[in-house]
Length: 175
Image 1 (cartoon, one colour):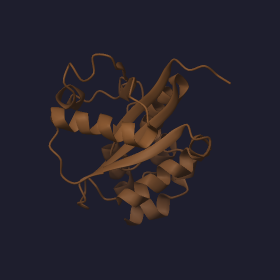
Image 2 (cartoon, one colour; image 1 turned 180 degrees about the horizontal axis):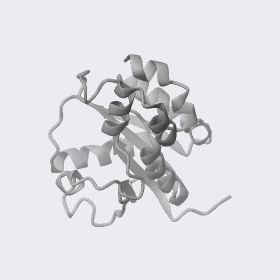
Image 3 (cartoon, helix red, strand yellow; image 1 turned 90 degrees about the vertical axis):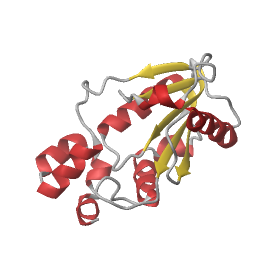
């Protein structure tokens, strides 16, 4: 059995929809952690920025990462409602991970999100290792994916979506 550097990692996002940038962050966590908890956030509103239901976004994650879910190395949790991004939000994330995995978070992987500094007090994460992934390495965002879907830019979408997500292209376009 492989030995991992960390016991429990966390990745937080909307994943609206899941793209290769998200996958890279999740895979980096899986490479270094025994177990990873993905927290899918949702404010329960369907709009241009959040066109996909929470259930559908989770379905796409499960479709792409089914092996890790069946191996019990990857778990999915949710945060719903319109929550303010502040220090209590970060504490809530750590509490959810503990409830879902039974372990304390010792690794966080995230993109160039400035919200990470707003979410966690220095005290809360002083013993948690963090890996910030430069979004410029994989210059993609869910916003760019949604725009490409509206334009029917299949060449772009094929480049930035996992083939298992690309199979859903008709559904993604019609939502």
